[in-house]
Image (tube, rainbow, N blue to C red):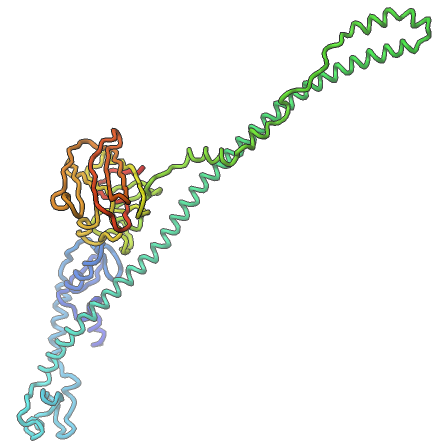
Length: 460
């Protein structure tokens, strides 16, 4: 029962008796300092045990539990310990003292023996309390290490769960994209086949009408020939009687011009098959969207909501996402999915209606954890409080920034010339130059985006 009572009064984080316990809305209690330390590395204040979101970041003191713990500690200190019940092997007296010189328990008789003459002696309870305090100090970094391992394990568990969510969502989007492509190809195939069938039907009708006309002419000519041949076979007297009528009959059948073959009667196979794949691909390009930059969702701050095609973003409600090393956890930022270490690259960003934003490029090594991330490895222009300012890690824009004398920007073109070490910004609507950074780049550079507003920022 005593062991169970002590377990019930033990903090789940430090595994020691509660010290200033606080209670969460889920009814779980923790040491006040332990809970604060646990929440320090967390984006969301949740219960370390059941993961329920805490209603308050300053939970109330559990006074009843505090009194129970203090009472338990008081009685435990007064309770005779197993060591005090032990007896000296030489004098059969209780071992209530401790020889600091020999570092061993002794009894009252041992205190007056020659073996411990002149030695520094203290009560064993005092020495035990001092050693317990020292052992707790030694144990503290071990507990902190345990908390670190538990935190990393929790993050790994959350990451493993999120991987499955990512896989399902990505699979669904891939299937949807291919469903649209399949639908386009199916419709294009039907249109091609329909055109072929229409041409075949039309040309077959022409040939049918041509052959029917020829058949009628053939029948009329054949009948004239048959009747005339019969008159020729008659006896001379009958022939001569009918001669003039026979000649008149033959001459009444006018001999028209010879019939001609129909030009273009065959199916125009070349029209239907020539560059079929290429022409279909060209038509497909008109319905397929393309963006010079797609966003990397694994780098996005939990407050940023990205579109399914990863080409737009806005600041919304915080999402439950793994705190992976690539993710920004303080600056509400996201990087492009592809970095550049050579060549020239450009992309346009629609910022119309957004009251605050930051655009530019970030070095691959830019710090993504903590507020200092915004101060290093980042070349950018920002819009805040109706002012446009250019900032860089080094150079004249590093300390106070360079104020830009422009107004009402809606679409900004970002141009990166890596080899020349130039990053330029232009008003894409009238091609007005806004600002250029000149700085040799030594590592891979990624497109950078930041906003804490609900307005949409789109990348073209």
